[in-house]
Length: 367
Image 1 (tube, one colour):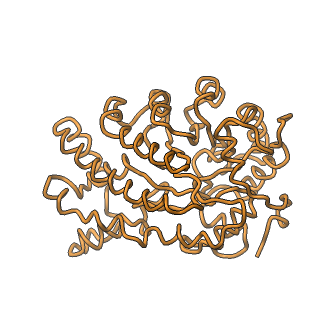
Image 2 (cartoon, helix red, strand yellow; image 1 turned 90 degrees about the vertical axis):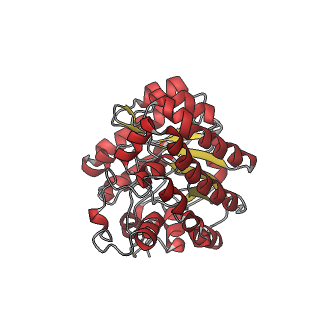
Image 3 (tube, helix red, strand yellow; image 1 turned 60 degrees about the vertical axis):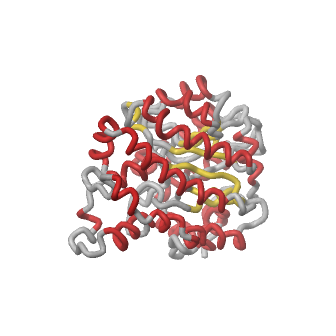
């Protein structure tokens, strides 16, 4: 199995306090690395062995040797970034709701835009919500504890409220009912939120969890997917409750959303979010964002996925140095990709990102 030595990286010294200090706008020894997901083919190439979603030991080995202080584990009805065959929500819909419809069993024929699994109150009442709270969803989070090295903690990717709601309703149906039947939409949000809150209460019993990461896209490149007023009415009160429960249990709250979040930033601050990811490099300026909100929030990200895919190693190195120079002084910034480290990223570019952070991310920042 490969290790940090094979890529010229420093010996791992994981320390969750490095992230905690950064989030609280203190300078630790170096700028932390932070990802909600490095896709398994990238982990596999790094370690020189296959890594799968069920193999939490190998995931720990990867994040440790790559220089991270945390291991992200998905504990949610939906996997990070996509709805795939492995997502619990997919299995529930396939096995419980459309088990007699062979045509719909093929996920490639589902349309998140048009497919509505909760269209009326009968659907809402009969949906098998208990399937989304089954104890086996927490199995990876429980299992990973015995593989964590000293100093390392887990980030639980959980808490999707917005995406899970519109996906179950089908997007077109969701936005129509948002206008025509607000109470029904509110009731679906409430059901989804309680599923997430019930999972969180179990997560809080695990001392190796240092943060909860809500991975819930709220915006397009040109602004919010629905109006800020609707977010304030239906979504943000639940986020605020999640934040309160996290902080009551000494757990940090991170939030991911692609797109232009500027119209929502004050709301995100009011929620009690500790860190926002990824300052979408396709539509947000890291300099302007840090200048405007850097004293109220910590941030992670902004190494564009497109750069990791098609840029040169020199371009990746320069971007990482710019982000460290621009965002890291005084704490409040963790280096991360502009969404996640995807399997289509150039592996050499990803390694360059790690090496550059290691070479230039020590405090005090002098790059």
